[in-house]
Image 1 (cartoon, rainbow, N blue to C red):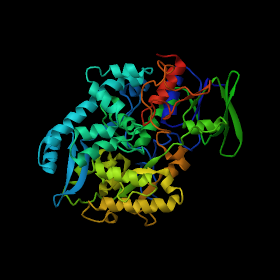
Image 2: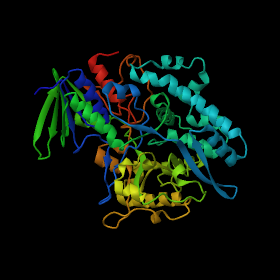
Image 3: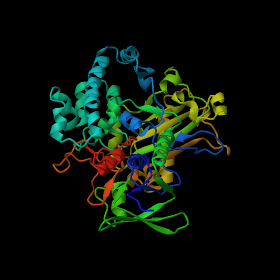
Length: 517
C-alpha cells in the first residue's frame, strides 16, 4: 500500500498528526521504534509484582488545548488539583511552609503566617495577574499560523510592561522587582527551570521561554492530572489515529530518510533485523532535530541539546508525615518544593555549571494518586498505597557522563536526604517493596532518557524551547514545522511550538499539509 505521509516516531505528537491527517482522508503510516506508542507520555509498571501504572517520564498536562481534544473526539479525563503547591521550610526556629491553594483566602493566610505581613500576598497576586495575561493573550495564537514578533507584542499594547518583563528582559529581573521573599521568588522561578538548565538572569532568556510554556497552557496555565496516567493521553490519541485509518507499526526502528525527486524514502528495520522501505510525498519527523539530521545523513545542529532533570518514581505504603505538621494529603496534592528557594536555585545552578552535583539538590514532587487513585489496583487502594513522583532540577547530562548509574544513585541519595529533612520519619519507613523485597523507587537521569527514548542529551523538549512566534520574515504565516529539507517536516517537540504534552506540534504539521490557515 502506498502512503501520502510517513510519520517517523509514534509519540503523542506523531499520533495527533496521524489522527488529523487520517480524518482528512490521507493515507498515513506511523513508524515507532519502541514496542508501544506514546514516547515519553506513557504509563508503565516498573516495579515487579506491584500493580501500579506510573507516568514514567511525563507527568502532567497543561498545554493540550481543549480545541484539540474536541476536534479529535478524545475521551480524556483531565483533573484539576485543589492545591497548587506546598513548600516546606525552616524559618524563625520553626518548621513551617507555604501553601498555595486554589482558595485565595487559604493562600493569603499561609503567606501571612510565613512572612508576618500581607505584602507577600499582594505581590503574589499582582505577579500572577500579569502572568495570566500571557496565557489569555498568547494561548489563542498557538492554534493558528505564526504571528510576527511585532504582532505578538501588539497583543500587549495596553500593558507593555508585561511584554517587556517576560520577552525582553531575564525572568530573574521580573521576579526580583515584583516579589521580596526569597522562598516565594523560588516557587515562581521553578516554572522557568523545568527541564531547562539556566540561571534566573540568563541573557539567552531560555528560562523565560520555559516559564511561558508553563503558565500559558490552554489559556489558564492549570496543570492537570490525566486520569489513568499519562498513558491514557497517548492511548486516546493512538485510538483516534487508528480510527481515522492510520497504519501504526511498533518495533519499527527507522535508520535512514532520503529525499527523492517526488518525495522521500524511509528505511526501517523490524524486530528480526529485516529492512524495509516506505515512501511518501512527505515525511513528518516526530524526533528531535538532531536525530533527524542523523537520519538524513547530515551533521547534527549545534549546540548539542542539554537535558537537565532527574526523574524519580516511587510507590509508598502511605504518605510520610511532615515536620511542619501539615496534612500530607494536602501538602502532596500539588507540587511539593524541596530546596527551591531563589538563592538555593541559583547556588545549585552555579555548582552544576562548574561541573559539580548540586550540594542541595532542588526538586519537586507530587502525588498522582491523591487526584487519581485509578492507577493503583483495587487491593493497593484498599491498603492506602500512594505514588510519589520527583522531578530534580539543575542536573545537566554532562554531570552523569563518567558513570551514569553510579552518579545517579549518588545524586538520588543526596536528593532523598534533602526531602527527608522536611519529614518527621525516614522515607524508607513508607516505601513499598516489590516482590523481590527491593524498595519501589527508580531514578532516571538525562542519559537514561537519551538511551531509552532517543532524546539527545535527555532533553525533554528535543532542543531549546523557542518563542511561539516567528523570528524571521520567512516564518510569518507558517505553521513553524519547516526544516532545511523540502520533503520533511517536524511534528514533534522540536517544532517551534513544541514542548510539553500538548499535541500542538502534531496538529501544526497536519494543518500545514492540509493547507489550513
